[in-house]
Image (cartoon, rainbow, N blue to C red; front, side, top):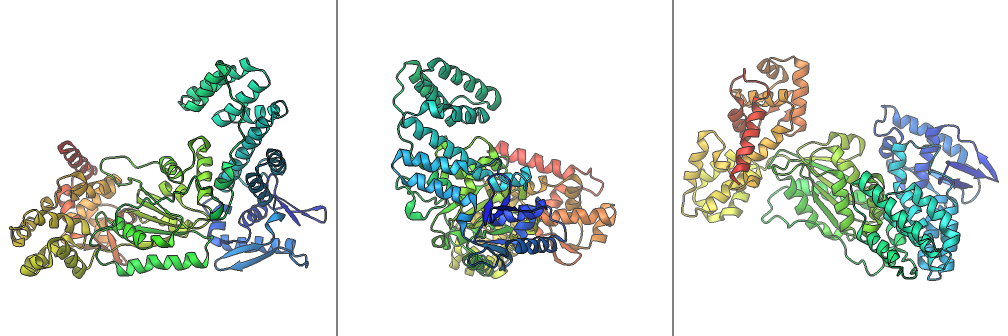
Length: 629
């Protein structure tokens, strides 16, 4: 049997095409063939087959398609493909060379390994000849094709570029010119193709045409993309103007080590750097033993299914220590990720800067992974494909800190192994449901852990000397490490002041004792950013809950307090819970932590306050803090 994906999805058996009448069956087969000999989780299959919106009966539908595929693949011959259920997914076991995609990649590897330019041209031509059109053209939507095949398309274009470069080095400009002209016209913003087209024109004696091509490319880049030509393209134009273009040099087979799976020993020695982007570990990290153990259990899953990525969404309110936990565990486990650790602060709840776009984050990771700028695609889906290709077959940790929501992190998640840690005030329910992420909601520190943190910051002797005052500080902070750290800092810079003086300040009921000297260590600012993420009704409800005499309310009581319907109130309570502003320790019992109650009382005013009042107050407070910097 032969399988074709580089065009229409087809099976050929005994010289005849096997009928695949159902598009979703063809699509499922294509996914399994792309991941041949690897387990593909059922949840991932469902997300891909139904474009991130699988129906309730998706699993049973997938089983039906699997049954049809097994009937098509069953030949009774030794070495025939086997489609088995393994773990929580399916694995298609077979010889990879029976699939045109894997033959294509193998030919790229061979081209990279040879120093004979004529042999390289032969290998590249053979690989490109396998393409019969757009990959998965009769099986995948544009949405799915971008997720499955962006890296394949980039591999094809890079192979075309290297074929052209090799032909130019062999003096075959006239023979290759039609290919380069057609390919460059289809990708006018790809400067590497423009440069090759200019060189080919120059080599056949069409110097004027080469300069006109540069002028058209410059106009396109400026008008369509807002960019000037790269320094390399400008230098090429100047060399042609001076009639001093050097002879074409043999191409470096760069694409093979970036786009094609290779063992670590095959990576070129000029790129030995492994990314180590973790910020410094947290000094005096306290507690969280259960959470650390749960994170470590993900390594067991990764060992059992190395081709399946593990994702963990760490959520919790502002100041609960999400980043500290993620960074501390990442440092403790860094030896388990020999291919490196990537880190980015996505600024989802940053008081000074807007959230980082996924495009900016992917580009920063491409830089960390040493993707040469000239090889980075201009189109966003292809950049994601390149990023995922660079991560393929690697044991690499990706820490996505301070994420705003699931949409911000989806393009940054590894798809073929590795582990991603996400921290956010949002509970990332969408990733848990659709990406199989493991949720890890952080509770406040226990009183014993809080006291240990305070003792680490101030010294055990000072805390032991005033046990009652220390206990009052611990209780007032509600187990939030940020709140404890702010109070500890105030006490540390006044070593001769008794802790009882600081404890007395906490009894006023406001947040002044937690005011920081800068915007990153001010508890009000941290809480205000959470509040600004809410709609007006949710912000108003939070303020009203702060005025309530009880720290725990039911949905019915909250509806009466807000003057809203029970259904509307439940939706608002759900929004507040998802944003980690309320907890629901028991069904229909919603708890507002003490520090949030203090803040809500500052903002809340009276129940008749306008709906946006709390948000306006938070914005005003944030502006004041910014003006003070």
